[in-house]
Amino acid sequence: IVMIQSPLSLPVTPGEPASISCRSSQSLLHSDGYNYLDWYLQKPGQSPQLLIYLGSNRASGVPDRFSGSGSGTDFTLKISRVEAEDVGVYYCMQPAQAPPYTFGQGTKLEIK
Amino acid sequence: EAQLVQSGGGLVQPGGSLRLSCAASGLTFSSNYMHWVRQAPGKGLVWVSRINGDGSDKIYADSVKGRFTISRDNDKNTLYLQMNSLRADDTAVYYCARDRPYSGSYNGFDYWGQGTLVTVSS
Image (spheres, each protein chain N blue to C red):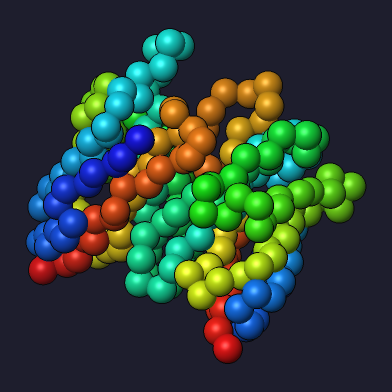
């Protein structure tokens, strides 16, 4: 499965919303009714951290300004109001049709 | 504190071998699937390998199949990646990551190690 993210670069003014798209070449909707799509954030110089799993479930400790939506092949990560600490590279990943597990190319969010 | 602590990276010549370790503390380990993910300098994340809780099921990316071996020692709460026949394009930061328990629901890769740099160069 190929995962395509857009945009690849996302300059955002603090306090403004941001949105990242992730499209998969095959459906990530499993027979159990869940969409197997994760979102990860890799802050500068750090390991990736889980933000969203199963398309729309926020991981423990993730602020509610982050939300995930979508189904099948089209997914979106939204940040309602960007903060300075949100800078980094955002990746979507599919575990639905593994192996292999595949990541998107990454979207670099920067503050204007 | 729940964490995965990695060790074992470094500089190795092409054709050489290296073993990475990932020690779990403060979190469940023995029943969980575990992964290795790598990131070449300035590039994105690439999945490498996965192992199930008891070590009986292992899968690999095509790029490392036959050269890398994933294993675990649940008595030591430690995950390993044995890397043989290393090539220049294996140069990357390698991360371990925890997945769901065998009988549990999927919750994403919820814990990641700090990463360890492997450089393959003569």
